[in-house]
Image: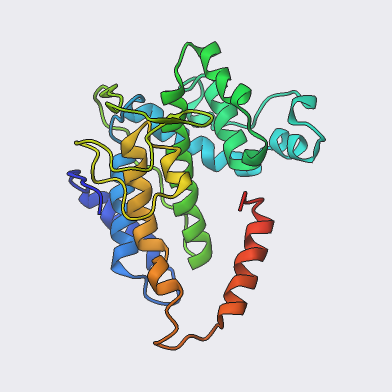
Length: 261
């Protein structure tokens, strides 16, 4: 597990417990704990964004699901053919630069068509790629929790109240690779980030490694919400679904979600 020293808010724990109580079957404690931890961390200052900005990014990840501009762009031959204004979170208007709102919406709704030039729009807001990476990590973590709530049939968690403080603005000591953004290589990172990789480094996590805490949040969620690779292919305990049925479902869901893989 990643090294995380955040003290989980008791109020957030109770709120998550209340949400999960709506499920028709008991929800595992590790899922409740993971959601409470990540929501607590969301409200705190991050690496590049304040707590207020981080909560606003999470809010935009939710609003993006129903954005008419995003729907028109996704249906167009090229997203650049469609112009207009995004539907945004009115409660937090003015907190985020327009460029970050656009990138969060793009990431949620049409990620396969993002390009290096798309991400470079952060420079117009006088920001760096690291700001985008942290925003992407927040958006993905929020979407992951929301999708779990949808699947369980429970209310979406209320976003937490932002906490005061300034971001650390600390870059990893080494970034040995670069795709659309700089990132750590697949080898063991140097301390204090040597907790990030196991035997296998998922490309999606590696792409967030310019902001190591973004990786840590997703490792917490994936550890609770996803079956481990070794158990996924272990049929010795008996399964309702066969391997072929699992692959069929995985392929269909990936196609619906426009997954790269």
